[in-house]
Length: 167
Image (cartoon, rainbow, N blue to C red; front, side, top):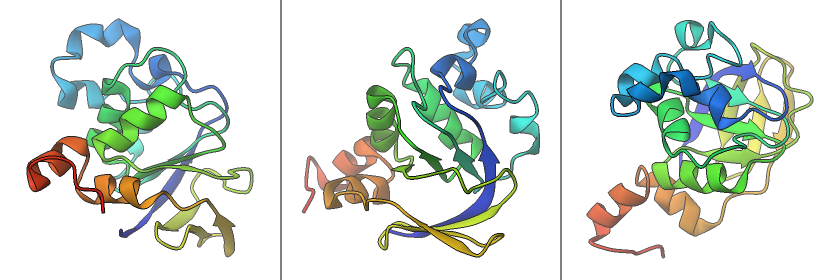
């Protein structure tokens, strides 16, 4: 699995799927690239306009709570976010993210600030905050999840292997 490097965009606790994919834009769910232009708009109105491909979303506790909308993590990925770091994730959001090929990592995000330059080493279980010159560890993902992420998500994994092959 590769390393990711990008700028941190810090959000707080309880970022819901409504913050990620605003309900008032429900009509765009069949046009995900257009919906991605509004990603996290209700948490930060300027996020989609100012973020760059490869940037990293950093949350607090219970990131992705709410409805099990698969398009919430999907539009985060379409927008170009390379990973999401949070203290905890809503279970369905976490699983949907992995299945879509979007790395979601559980770690202590208190020392990360908005704008910090981060480098994530998936295999080592380390986040290097290059701005503050500190290391934050996370529990490395199981090999099966790393395989799914490496393949770009569960659908790509099935296509590549003509079924499940996680070893």
